[in-house]
Image (cartoon, rainbow, N blue to C red; front, top):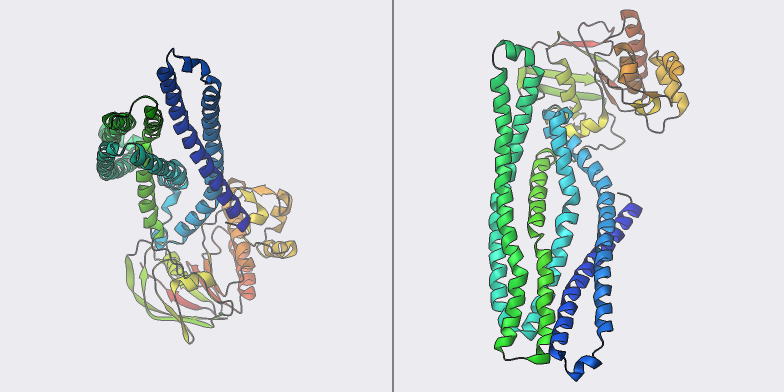
Length: 529
């Protein structure tokens, strides 16, 4: 988050907090002054005092506090949502960047591409984004209001603190039980919904064979039963909320009655009851705010569950993905590298790797032999192996910072050609040279140039692959890993483009995966499944 945005967010939060306190202050005084006015009128009765009593001042104050409460609540919502949305922009960018860097994401094969999982994580991010607005700010104002009224009760009606304290302890005890049981219920509901969605999605995708095998009804029934059990878990949470709200709803009236009973027991009458009456009705107004305690509690439960779930992806994020600019290894070697699949499984027997600058290395093998996985392992995207580079050791995170990994399943984003080349502020002339080297310059000119809007379905597989190779051409990293770079290209075109790439990368370490060794002067490593 930039300093300007961060400063604006802090100002918005301070403004929202001020509005929240103003709303609570006006709500308390609205009830208190109303009760004071009623008590004063009752005491004045039909005596001569009634003719000298100025009702207009009290009435004006009541209207003022009523309007102030409404205006402050709207102000709190506007400022609070502005602050939360401002934080949301930076927090989501940081969160998804951390998730993308986390080893759990790499090992899971980018499961965020699954719509149902992505929806869960977006919900989790929203729960994190708005926890401060839904729980933090209301809890702060409620705690401050409690502190003020407890202090007032200690001065005006000390005996009233006994039932008030007892009820507060009961609310805290009930809240603790709801928090524990609610966390379990919420976690169970999340798990059941995810399992049911996964099973139902699999059944929908295999409808014909499941119907042919007579298993369609069973699969759908079991998937929907998971949703039903999830709703049952949430129903139990709602019931706990209702019980908690019942105790919270009793707090205001009990506190108000306790204040009046305490002063009556102390023998105070007449005008001496006006100040305690104001305090008693202030407790009633605060009790109204206490009715939202269960919603604050659920917001905290959801925030904690979201934080734990996202923490599984971000907790082990590798923060060492950096390497000094002056590291340009001439050799990378590993004497006994155990090849691994993306899920961490071992593949075959350990192999010896010696990757030299200026001498391309070719990984040869049939489909399924693990060529792509080995490239990812060299790049540091699978496993935590350390490679020797001269007199230093390069960790997986450092190799990620040094490597340009160009996978064969190229993706064209729905964006401009310029954005799809991933080259930042590279001049247009350099972009056109890269497209020319990949033999895509004519196609891009026909599409409208570098700023034309493109997407995946506008290109053939071969054209998408050539955009991918243009990205590789523009990379300045010292370790270049090309995964089947001639895939989807005819033989002659593939050889021409690959020859240009290797000439450009003559001062770098280059590893190429292919189905057959055809590079002159390259060292070949044959891989078997």
